[in-house]
Length: 411
Image (cartoon, rainbow, N blue to C red; front, side, top):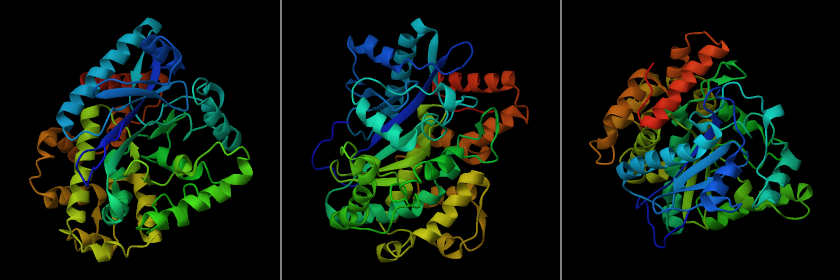
């Protein structure tokens, strides 16, 4: 993503959406992202840049990322741009009888047997990751997420944004969970991707830490307490110094001082760009309310410890919007004085965010998510406890229609 200079808080946003490439008929994964890029570029490249939305490769050969070419503020135009590029990619994939499939995890992929890693540009980075962590497995090669980059300039803006993000991170999966099925069955969790996310680099604990980032509020402090520790801890595993700590940092939100942005990474991808952008718009509105101190004084935001926030997060990734939030101090941020389900807490946040202009275009999408549940809940309702291969195919094929039409999925 090409970053302009002098971006301040909430000026514009970078959005990244990851999709699976699957066979049109069987929905089995197809590791042909390299062919897609060759067809688009005429050579073995890893990125195709266009005016609004660009494409890039990922770790696994069956995944392609669509992303903003530069930060954008108009999410309505961006939704149409993503829809158009989904159509373009699908057209190019049709020669291989393939298409894009949404959702944060393939429901029956066997990653230990089917994983194929990217082998072209920058392959030494992926090979190093694979050597250290073994990138076969759920959470590595079987995952798709939505990332948002939120800009800041200088330590003061960074501190205010980082404090707000830390408070909102624990409940984001209540909106975005979309990974309830792995290995052909319900895992017992609505956001299974994040359970793997927090565990798959445990050999070097400082890389992911507690997912919720530490209360660090300056660039120098972040470099000292996070990036330098990662660099020190990874050194015995990476003698050739191929991996940079900025790339390795896998907290749920990572500071990119080189970009002047904080990237939120814990959002499961949805069924269509409109749903993704609706969720992102609500998250941004909540962050704006915190940064502007409409919900809690900035000084008190900074005082929240990581363990308390992680305790909420670790329960939300299991039950998403159904999770009972019962921490009185956390609830008080939003003016709630009794335990509520996480989905109802988001309804409260929507009220507090007020008639924000950024939320107006997403009324119908947010209504589905807040009234009928996360995509994970809607997938499970559609499956109806029937996990036959045929039924999984039918439900996930319906998701491919939602992606193609850029419409939210309803059971």
